[in-house]
Amino acid sequence: MTNSAEQKRLVTKKFLVLNRSMSAKRHMEYPQKWNSLRDAATTLFAAEGYQRASMRALADRLGVTRSYIDSYFRDKEMLLHAVLDTHLLDLLAEVERAEPIGASPEARLTALAGAYLAWIAGAGAAGQRVLLEAARFLSPTHRADIDTRQRWLAALFADAISGVLPQALQPRLLTPLTQALLRLLESFAAEEGIATGEAAMLAVRCILYGATTMAGESA
Image (tube, rainbow, N blue to C red):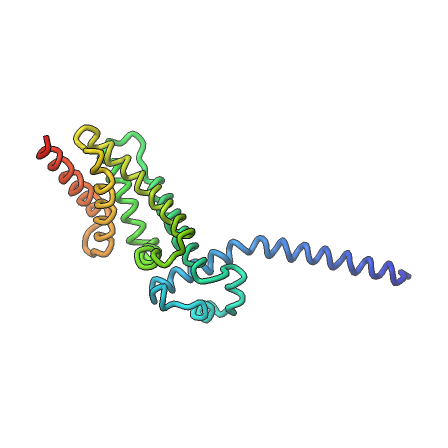
């Protein structure tokens, strides 16, 4: 028969084993739950607008408490930052994945444009809507992160554009041409009845035509 000290030791050991098991489970589930909250917020912000959407509405939609959400995101802005940061990282990954090996410069640019358009018109449509509508509500620190992601994306397209027009392109035009291409692709994302590949090719050729025309006029 065990004495009280031994019983206490056994109970304590059992508690520690169970507690370690529960902690490990929570640790493993954390990313999944974090992602689920972020994805639900993306849908909510896109549907209702960031300012109108509330953390309470998000909690009600998911059937959880507000304190549950607070344990993952301390406030709505932190949640918005997670939505936009993930969206841009996913978009960048999709564009980089589409980069063809051994393709001509124009084919490379068109492939990147097609991947960009396919993402913002498809799986990333809600995230893109939130980005365009709500990025201005971020604090300077959080906005700096998002600006960095966007610069990475713009740099990839700027490199592709300069690869097509290495001689004709004036350096001062590279940034506005890059931004014009991205804005043109965003406008096509809302259009129906035109295939992604066709829209991407049209956008690229419009930008290249404008650049070569300006180069010829200034020559």
